[in-house]
Image 1 (cartoon, one colour):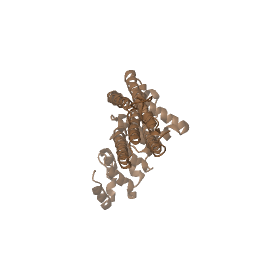
Image 2 (cartoon, one colour; image 1 turned 60 degrees about the vertical axis):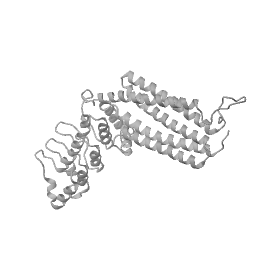
Image 3 (cartoon, helix red, strand yellow; image 1 turned 30 degrees about the vertical axis):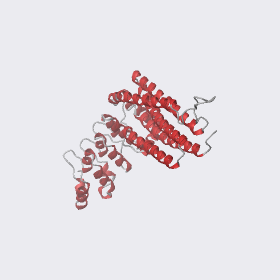
Image 4 (tube, one colour; image 1 turned 45 degrees about the horizontal axis):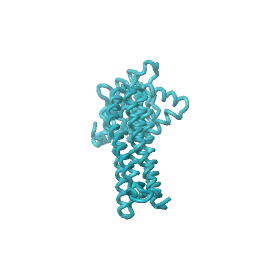
Amino acid sequence: MGHARVARALIEACPDATELQDDRGGTFVHAAAMGGHSEVVRLAIKKPMLGGGGLLNTQDGDGNTPLHLAVAAREPAIAEALLWTGQVRAEVTNNDGHTPLDLAAKSTDFYSMVSLVVTLTAFGAQFRPQRRDHVQRWDSRNITKAIEKTSDSLAVVAVLVAGVAFTAANNLPGSYEQEGNTKGMAVLRRMTIFKCFLILDSVALVTSILAVVLLVYGKASRSARSWKSFAAALHCIWMSLISMLLAFYAAIAAVTSALGVYDIRVFVVNLVLVVLFIVLSAFVSPPVSHLIMCKFLWQCGFRGRQGGVVRRRISQQYPVVGAFVFNLLLFRAAHYVILFAGFIIVSTLRGGSDVT
Protein backbone atom coordinates (compact mmCIF):
# COMPACT_ATOMS: atom_id res chain seq x y z
CA MET A 1 0.00 0.00 0.00
CA GLY A 2 3.00 2.32 0.04
CA HIS A 3 3.21 2.79 -3.75
CA ALA A 4 0.93 5.69 -4.64
CA ARG A 5 1.48 5.32 -8.39
CA VAL A 6 0.49 1.66 -8.32
CA ALA A 7 -2.58 2.44 -6.21
CA ARG A 8 -3.57 5.23 -8.60
CA ALA A 9 -3.22 2.95 -11.60
CA LEU A 10 -5.32 0.24 -9.96
CA ILE A 11 -8.05 2.69 -9.01
CA GLU A 12 -8.20 4.17 -12.52
CA ALA A 13 -8.26 0.71 -14.11
CA CYS A 14 -10.78 -0.79 -11.69
CA PRO A 15 -12.66 1.75 -9.53
CA ASP A 16 -14.60 -1.03 -7.83
CA ALA A 17 -11.35 -2.21 -6.22
CA THR A 18 -11.71 0.61 -3.68
CA GLU A 19 -14.66 -1.21 -2.14
CA LEU A 20 -12.66 -4.34 -1.38
CA GLN A 21 -12.18 -5.13 2.30
CA ASP A 22 -9.77 -7.37 4.15
CA ASP A 23 -10.72 -10.01 6.71
CA ARG A 24 -11.04 -7.28 9.37
CA GLY A 25 -13.39 -5.17 7.29
CA GLY A 26 -10.81 -2.52 6.47
CA THR A 27 -10.43 -0.74 3.13
CA PHE A 28 -7.22 0.32 1.42
CA VAL A 29 -7.51 3.67 3.22
CA HIS A 30 -7.45 1.86 6.57
CA ALA A 31 -4.34 -0.05 5.50
CA ALA A 32 -2.61 3.11 4.25
CA ALA A 33 -3.42 5.06 7.42
CA MET A 34 -2.24 2.23 9.66
CA GLY A 35 0.95 1.79 7.61
CA GLY A 36 1.80 5.49 7.52
CA HIS A 37 1.51 5.79 3.72
CA SER A 38 0.45 9.42 3.47
CA GLU A 39 0.58 9.59 -0.35
CA VAL A 40 -1.99 6.82 -0.68
CA VAL A 41 -4.25 8.52 1.87
CA ARG A 42 -3.97 11.81 -0.03
CA LEU A 43 -4.84 9.93 -3.21
CA ALA A 44 -8.09 8.78 -1.59
CA ILE A 45 -8.78 12.33 -0.45
CA LYS A 46 -8.22 13.90 -3.87
CA LYS A 47 -10.18 11.36 -5.91
CA PRO A 48 -13.88 12.40 -5.92
CA MET A 49 -14.76 9.10 -7.60
CA LEU A 50 -13.93 7.26 -4.37
CA GLY A 51 -17.02 8.38 -2.58
CA GLY A 52 -15.50 11.27 -0.65
CA GLY A 53 -16.28 11.30 3.04
CA GLY A 54 -18.05 7.94 2.93
CA LEU A 55 -14.83 6.05 2.29
CA LEU A 56 -12.87 8.21 4.73
CA ASN A 57 -15.40 7.53 7.50
CA THR A 58 -15.82 3.80 6.89
CA GLN A 59 -15.42 1.72 10.05
CA ASP A 60 -13.71 -1.66 10.02
CA GLY A 61 -14.72 -4.70 12.06
CA ASP A 62 -13.32 -3.10 15.23
CA GLY A 63 -15.19 0.12 14.60
CA ASN A 64 -12.03 2.03 13.68
CA THR A 65 -12.07 4.69 10.99
CA PRO A 66 -8.90 5.59 9.07
CA LEU A 67 -8.50 8.48 11.52
CA HIS A 68 -8.51 6.05 14.46
CA LEU A 69 -5.79 3.99 12.81
CA ALA A 70 -3.68 7.04 11.91
CA VAL A 71 -3.72 8.12 15.56
CA ALA A 72 -2.98 4.59 16.77
CA ALA A 73 -0.03 4.43 14.34
CA ARG A 74 1.21 7.83 15.59
CA GLU A 75 0.92 9.51 12.19
CA PRO A 76 -0.07 13.16 12.82
CA ALA A 77 0.54 14.12 9.17
CA ILE A 78 -2.07 11.61 7.97
CA ALA A 79 -4.50 12.66 10.70
CA GLU A 80 -4.10 16.29 9.65
CA ALA A 81 -4.62 15.45 5.97
CA LEU A 82 -7.83 13.59 6.78
CA LEU A 83 -9.17 16.36 9.01
CA TRP A 84 -8.40 19.13 6.50
CA THR A 85 -10.96 17.60 4.13
CA GLY A 86 -13.77 18.70 6.43
CA GLN A 87 -15.56 15.41 5.73
CA VAL A 88 -14.03 13.21 8.42
CA ARG A 89 -16.04 12.72 11.61
CA ALA A 90 -13.60 13.04 14.50
CA GLU A 91 -16.15 12.17 17.20
CA VAL A 92 -16.83 8.59 16.03
CA THR A 93 -16.16 5.91 18.67
CA ASN A 94 -14.84 2.43 17.92
CA ASN A 95 -16.09 -0.81 19.48
CA ASP A 96 -14.10 -0.06 22.64
CA GLY A 97 -15.82 3.31 22.98
CA HIS A 98 -12.72 5.34 22.09
CA THR A 99 -12.62 8.40 19.87
CA PRO A 100 -9.42 9.21 17.95
CA LEU A 101 -8.55 11.79 20.61
CA ASP A 102 -8.76 9.13 23.32
CA LEU A 103 -6.30 6.92 21.43
CA ALA A 104 -3.63 9.64 21.54
CA ALA A 105 -3.10 8.73 25.20
CA LYS A 106 -1.57 5.43 24.10
CA SER A 107 1.30 7.19 22.32
CA THR A 108 4.52 6.73 24.29
CA ASP A 109 6.50 9.37 22.38
CA PHE A 110 6.04 12.90 23.71
CA TYR A 111 6.23 14.74 20.38
CA SER A 112 3.89 12.28 18.68
CA MET A 113 1.39 12.68 21.51
CA VAL A 114 1.59 16.49 21.36
CA SER A 115 1.22 16.51 17.57
CA LEU A 116 -1.83 14.25 17.66
CA VAL A 117 -3.59 16.05 20.51
CA VAL A 118 -2.94 19.48 19.01
CA THR A 119 -4.05 18.43 15.52
CA LEU A 120 -7.21 16.65 16.65
CA THR A 121 -8.24 19.39 19.07
CA ALA A 122 -7.62 22.09 16.47
CA PHE A 123 -10.24 20.48 14.23
CA GLY A 124 -12.79 20.08 17.02
CA ALA A 125 -12.27 16.41 17.91
CA GLN A 126 -14.06 15.29 21.08
CA PHE A 127 -13.27 12.98 23.97
CA ARG A 128 -15.66 10.18 24.82
CA PRO A 129 -18.02 11.05 27.69
CA GLN A 130 -16.74 9.62 30.97
CA ARG A 131 -16.34 10.47 34.63
CA ARG A 132 -13.34 12.61 35.52
CA ASP A 133 -11.96 10.00 37.91
CA HIS A 134 -11.98 7.44 35.07
CA VAL A 135 -9.91 9.56 32.68
CA GLN A 136 -6.76 7.78 31.51
CA ARG A 137 -3.95 10.23 32.19
CA TRP A 138 -1.03 10.21 29.76
CA ASP A 139 2.06 8.68 31.36
CA SER A 140 4.46 11.62 31.74
CA ARG A 141 7.23 9.74 33.53
CA ASN A 142 9.37 9.58 30.41
CA ILE A 143 9.13 13.31 29.77
CA THR A 144 9.88 14.01 33.44
CA LYS A 145 13.07 11.97 33.20
CA ALA A 146 13.97 13.70 29.94
CA ILE A 147 13.48 17.12 31.57
CA GLU A 148 15.77 16.15 34.43
CA LYS A 149 18.50 14.97 32.06
CA THR A 150 18.13 17.98 29.78
CA SER A 151 18.23 20.33 32.77
CA ASP A 152 21.77 19.22 33.54
CA SER A 153 22.97 20.01 30.02
CA LEU A 154 21.12 23.33 29.91
CA ALA A 155 22.60 24.32 33.26
CA VAL A 156 26.09 23.79 31.83
CA VAL A 157 25.20 25.95 28.81
CA ALA A 158 23.80 28.68 31.06
CA VAL A 159 26.93 28.68 33.23
CA LEU A 160 29.14 28.93 30.14
CA VAL A 161 27.13 31.87 28.81
CA ALA A 162 27.37 33.58 32.19
CA GLY A 163 31.14 33.02 32.18
CA VAL A 164 31.51 34.47 28.68
CA ALA A 165 29.36 37.49 29.56
CA PHE A 166 31.34 38.10 32.77
CA THR A 167 34.65 37.83 30.88
CA ALA A 168 33.42 40.25 28.21
CA ALA A 169 32.53 42.78 30.91
CA ASN A 170 36.11 42.62 32.21
CA ASN A 171 37.71 42.81 28.75
CA LEU A 172 35.85 45.72 27.20
CA PRO A 173 36.24 46.55 23.50
CA GLY A 174 38.56 49.48 22.86
CA SER A 175 40.62 48.82 26.00
CA TYR A 176 41.05 51.27 28.91
CA GLU A 177 42.46 54.74 29.47
CA GLN A 178 46.12 54.54 30.45
CA GLU A 179 46.69 57.99 31.96
CA GLY A 180 45.03 61.07 33.37
CA ASN A 181 42.04 61.37 35.67
CA THR A 182 40.16 58.77 33.65
CA LYS A 183 42.83 56.10 33.96
CA GLY A 184 41.27 52.63 34.08
CA MET A 185 38.00 53.72 32.48
CA ALA A 186 36.77 52.45 29.11
CA VAL A 187 38.03 54.40 26.12
CA LEU A 188 34.70 54.05 24.30
CA ARG A 189 32.53 54.84 27.31
CA ARG A 190 30.90 57.87 25.65
CA MET A 191 29.82 55.98 22.54
CA THR A 192 26.16 55.01 22.41
CA ILE A 193 26.97 51.73 20.68
CA PHE A 194 29.35 50.85 23.53
CA LYS A 195 26.59 51.49 26.07
CA CYS A 196 24.39 49.20 24.01
CA PHE A 197 27.09 46.53 24.30
CA LEU A 198 27.12 46.89 28.09
CA ILE A 199 23.33 46.55 28.30
CA LEU A 200 23.27 43.45 26.09
CA ASP A 201 26.13 41.86 27.98
CA SER A 202 24.36 42.53 31.28
CA VAL A 203 21.14 40.99 29.95
CA ALA A 204 23.07 37.88 28.87
CA LEU A 205 24.65 37.56 32.32
CA VAL A 206 21.42 38.08 34.28
CA THR A 207 19.25 35.79 32.13
CA SER A 208 21.82 32.98 32.16
CA ILE A 209 22.11 33.11 35.96
CA LEU A 210 18.31 33.19 36.24
CA ALA A 211 18.15 30.12 33.98
CA VAL A 212 20.50 28.22 36.30
CA VAL A 213 18.34 29.11 39.30
CA LEU A 214 15.15 27.98 37.52
CA LEU A 215 16.72 24.69 36.40
CA VAL A 216 18.00 23.89 39.88
CA TYR A 217 14.63 24.77 41.39
CA GLY A 218 12.71 22.68 38.86
CA LYS A 219 14.91 19.65 39.37
CA ALA A 220 14.67 19.92 43.14
CA SER A 221 10.90 20.49 43.31
CA ARG A 222 9.85 17.41 41.26
CA SER A 223 6.31 18.77 41.12
CA ALA A 224 3.92 20.16 38.54
CA ARG A 225 5.89 23.40 38.66
CA SER A 226 9.03 21.70 37.34
CA TRP A 227 7.71 21.89 33.77
CA LYS A 228 6.92 25.61 34.13
CA SER A 229 10.35 26.38 35.55
CA PHE A 230 11.97 24.32 32.78
CA ALA A 231 10.07 26.25 30.09
CA ALA A 232 10.98 29.57 31.72
CA ALA A 233 14.62 28.48 31.87
CA LEU A 234 14.56 27.72 28.14
CA HIS A 235 13.31 31.24 27.41
CA CYS A 236 16.04 32.71 29.62
CA ILE A 237 18.80 30.65 28.00
CA TRP A 238 17.65 31.58 24.52
CA MET A 239 17.48 35.26 25.48
CA SER A 240 20.97 35.07 26.98
CA LEU A 241 22.35 33.49 23.78
CA ILE A 242 20.74 36.13 21.57
CA SER A 243 21.91 38.92 23.90
CA MET A 244 25.44 37.56 23.88
CA LEU A 245 25.55 37.43 20.07
CA LEU A 246 24.05 40.91 19.79
CA ALA A 247 26.62 42.13 22.32
CA PHE A 248 29.34 40.72 20.08
CA TYR A 249 27.68 42.49 17.16
CA ALA A 250 27.68 45.78 19.10
CA ALA A 251 31.33 45.34 20.13
CA ILE A 252 32.36 44.80 16.51
CA ALA A 253 30.35 47.85 15.45
CA ALA A 254 32.02 49.97 18.16
CA VAL A 255 35.61 49.22 17.15
CA THR A 256 35.28 48.64 13.38
CA SER A 257 35.53 51.47 10.91
CA ALA A 258 36.10 49.51 7.70
CA LEU A 259 32.64 49.08 6.19
CA GLY A 260 33.58 45.96 4.21
CA VAL A 261 34.87 44.11 7.27
CA TYR A 262 31.86 45.27 9.25
CA ASP A 263 29.41 43.97 6.65
CA ILE A 264 31.12 40.57 6.52
CA ARG A 265 30.99 40.21 10.29
CA VAL A 266 27.36 41.28 10.39
CA PHE A 267 26.58 38.61 7.80
CA VAL A 268 28.40 35.98 9.87
CA VAL A 269 26.49 36.93 13.03
CA ASN A 270 23.18 36.81 11.17
CA LEU A 271 24.05 33.41 9.72
CA VAL A 272 24.98 32.03 13.16
CA LEU A 273 21.68 33.23 14.64
CA VAL A 274 19.60 31.74 11.84
CA VAL A 275 21.40 28.38 11.99
CA LEU A 276 21.13 28.32 15.79
CA PHE A 277 17.40 28.99 15.65
CA ILE A 278 16.78 26.35 12.97
CA VAL A 279 18.75 23.69 14.85
CA LEU A 280 17.09 24.43 18.18
CA SER A 281 13.62 24.56 16.62
CA ALA A 282 14.19 21.15 15.05
CA PHE A 283 14.85 19.67 18.49
CA VAL A 284 11.98 21.26 20.42
CA SER A 285 9.23 21.47 17.79
CA PRO A 286 6.67 18.77 17.06
CA PRO A 287 5.73 18.22 13.39
CA VAL A 288 2.79 20.65 13.58
CA SER A 289 2.39 23.89 11.66
CA HIS A 290 1.94 27.30 13.27
CA LEU A 291 -1.60 27.46 11.91
CA ILE A 292 -2.59 24.20 13.61
CA MET A 293 -1.08 25.32 16.92
CA CYS A 294 -2.93 28.63 16.73
CA LYS A 295 -6.19 26.78 15.98
CA PHE A 296 -5.50 24.58 19.00
CA LEU A 297 -5.10 27.59 21.30
CA TRP A 298 -8.28 29.07 19.84
CA GLN A 299 -10.24 25.90 20.56
CA CYS A 300 -8.94 25.79 24.14
CA GLY A 301 -9.04 29.42 25.12
CA PHE A 302 -11.41 31.50 23.02
CA ARG A 303 -14.55 29.44 22.52
CA GLY A 304 -16.35 30.39 25.69
CA ARG A 305 -17.78 27.62 27.80
CA GLN A 306 -17.03 24.88 25.26
CA GLY A 307 -13.40 26.00 25.11
CA GLY A 308 -13.18 25.84 28.89
CA VAL A 309 -14.46 22.26 28.89
CA VAL A 310 -11.89 21.22 26.27
CA ARG A 311 -9.10 23.01 28.13
CA ARG A 312 -9.91 21.33 31.44
CA ARG A 313 -10.13 17.89 29.87
CA ILE A 314 -6.82 18.30 28.06
CA SER A 315 -5.11 19.63 31.19
CA GLN A 316 -6.37 16.57 33.05
CA GLN A 317 -5.50 13.90 30.49
CA TYR A 318 -2.56 15.59 28.73
CA PRO A 319 -1.25 18.01 31.38
CA VAL A 320 1.75 19.47 29.53
CA VAL A 321 0.34 19.91 26.02
CA GLY A 322 -1.21 23.35 26.46
CA ALA A 323 1.85 24.78 28.23
CA PHE A 324 4.18 23.26 25.64
CA VAL A 325 2.33 24.74 22.66
CA PHE A 326 1.99 28.16 24.30
CA ASN A 327 5.67 28.30 25.24
CA LEU A 328 6.75 27.09 21.81
CA LEU A 329 4.78 29.83 20.05
CA LEU A 330 6.03 32.38 22.58
CA PHE A 331 9.58 31.18 22.01
CA ARG A 332 9.33 31.62 18.25
CA ALA A 333 7.62 35.00 18.46
CA ALA A 334 10.10 36.29 21.05
CA HIS A 335 13.00 35.09 18.91
CA TYR A 336 11.95 37.14 15.89
CA VAL A 337 11.04 40.21 17.94
CA ILE A 338 14.26 40.25 19.98
CA LEU A 339 16.47 39.38 17.02
CA PHE A 340 15.16 41.96 14.57
CA ALA A 341 14.67 44.65 17.21
CA GLY A 342 18.20 44.09 18.48
CA PHE A 343 19.81 44.33 15.06
CA ILE A 344 17.74 47.37 14.12
CA ILE A 345 18.67 49.18 17.33
CA VAL A 346 22.37 48.36 17.07
CA SER A 347 22.49 49.26 13.37
CA THR A 348 20.65 52.53 14.02
CA LEU A 349 23.00 53.47 16.83
CA ARG A 350 26.03 52.73 14.68
CA GLY A 351 24.64 54.68 11.76
CA GLY A 352 23.76 57.64 13.95
CA SER A 353 25.89 59.77 16.20
CA ASP A 354 28.86 57.97 17.74
CA VAL A 355 29.03 59.93 20.96
CA THR A 356 26.37 61.05 23.42
